[in-house]
Image (cartoon, rainbow, N blue to C red; front, side, top):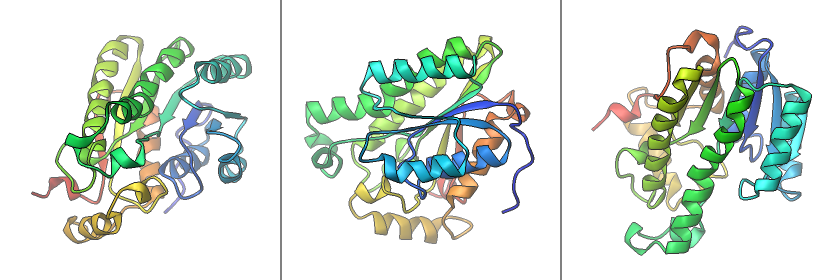
Length: 258
């Protein structure tokens, strides 16, 4: 793909959820960088750092800090550093989802209370906590992106409890868009088709899901993390100032098929 124009020149953005160079968030980070943005990048813990640091270096991250979204203290330190270093924040990418394996790979009706609470807290409420801290730094408006999936709208085999969790995430996206719109802060969700990422590999029979997406999508192919990144750039740029509360499908058209 051709590199994007410098649509984000001068903008400051936070990227949360890079697992490695193959993750959706990595594709977005590279696209943001290529479009001229300065970036802050986080990693979960010391175990994750070696996989995230090469991505942070490749995009010239000006801030690189640990962030476990279950830790309010770590999140506070991150946003304090952003305020100290930049004094503002123009966009945030929230690309985080987690569910304990037993609950993720079991039926929805069998999901444990603890597993459901964990999935909702990390995958959904973490976005609310993040936006709560980002809002004061977006004095002149901004954009928040989160990462959803078609399983939020329709039942997808083996996606299980993450379907209801992503549905909640999409609803939160709409409510945040309504609440923050008067301040010029836009909130949208990306809904990419399946890509072979570490997150996807946790879903049972993921290979079958990949094959179905490839065969049934109108374009009869899978999307790439670079293509997801290109859409992300457009959404956080000033060219999309009238776009908020949307679910942006990047799935080669799969979501239009019955």
